[in-house]
Length: 349
Image 1 (cartoon, rainbow, N blue to C red):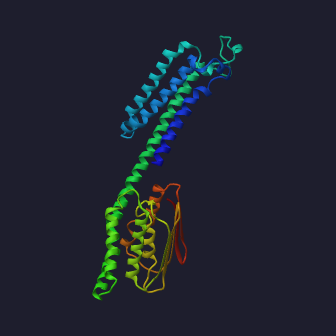
Image 2 (image 1 turned 180 degrees about the vertical axis):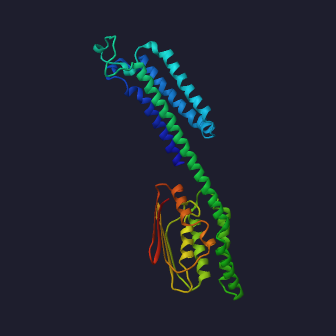
């Protein structure tokens, strides 16, 4: 909603700037005559109104229907036709009303002369034609760049949506299988923690299948998902790794993009655990009125991974999603040092 308001405001501002060009191009000596009764000003104003109309015709019709579908000849033919049509209309209805705005000069200089100024050899009408052509081409270029940028963002969004769908569809099979094995072990020993572990895993599955398809979810549910993930990892790992997890702050009534934090947590458990050596994982989450702070530190351990374990979605995917969903509203610092790997994320909610 906020981005839509900004776009509308920018379009309105752009139209105001374009419509102000005729006023700014008027000679100061003619302003006391009344702009709207001057034929040249009316013509110049109409030309810029037509430029705005042509921009939106380009933006919503010609560029997407012709240029982006590679019908370049048809696109070029139409824009050239429209330019000469506008010029013809302009000259038919306004050429008899006197000089154009750029030709207005003080009365003493209005004495006609048969020769052109040597320093300005081109006739005024030719100069105005060139100026109109430059403005026309600028509108075309701006419309093309704007539409291409929109198409690129849409493609990136669709790509991230596919990646997110894949991420939601898997909940990391290795984690799921290991957790089920851990729950099975609890069941065999008739541990009191069996039921709690099943509930946590069930909540995670329910969240991914029913909530995480939305563009934004309740922050409280997202943090609960992370808490369940960490609790089940602690259950699986037992005493083989020191896991410290702290979460503070008030998360109710706040929203967040789903599953944008969990890859950083998964990465710590994936690369920071080795049963054969001492290791630690420290995760801190703090939420205040506007921000979420995430800090993750894990010891780097010696583990060899298969090619499959390196594939899939991880830090790179999470970073792209942050850039797309929170442009200018997040700070991500990753430090890959000799003995430690750390992630620091500050997110404006």
